[in-house]
Image (cartoon, rainbow, N blue to C red; front, side, top):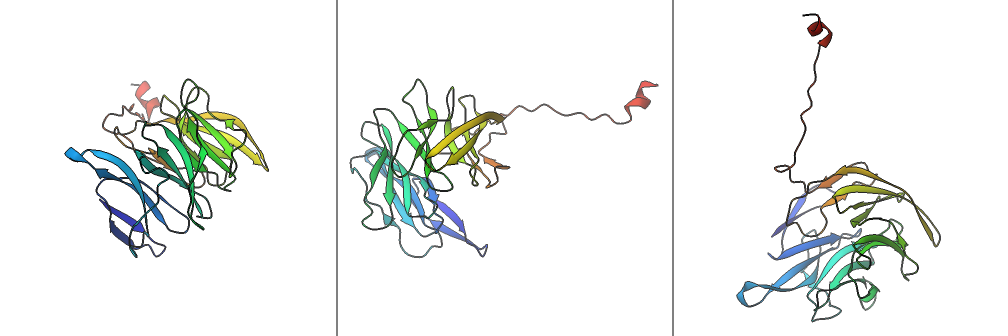
Length: 253
């Protein structure tokens, strides 16, 4: 697979990375972490490992030490604002997901952030790095939660009736996520030192995503006003808008 990274001088750099590339995350300091699958007998994917790469094409890719080598996969999810900690989804041999944190200072020793008997994944740092939103399936369905970081404390539930793929508005007052009906939801967030409250939650629009896309289906601009979505236009039904001009003259005929 070829990955194009664009630097501050607006010149794109094409990078050749593993063909079994799954997803990636780029830090504020310019480090790229991506997952690549290893092929077993019959060319079946056995597991995914994470690799570190400079998006400007310099240096060599570096395999990151895995917390459990027998894992099915590790998938980068979010960098802390200072680029020093990477959140990633860890999938154990039984297929269960948990959220781990990998520091990039010192010995790079990963540790669990959220782990239970249920799946927890898609961790995303808040703009100030003091909170992490994530998805957990320990109720009847996946829901979106927020917990303090670095020490997980009492979590706050954001979604009601299901939710996935949470993303923060970059200046903090909103948290976006997808409902089970693929509605884009926006939750008002108020966070102070050690306290976070969820205000009103509203529906923005409905999406028709492309099937078979792994990871996040969308991203949002810093001000929360524009979205980039993997949209299936071929199967999206639209209602045509008809504009009639000079309609008063038509009535006189």
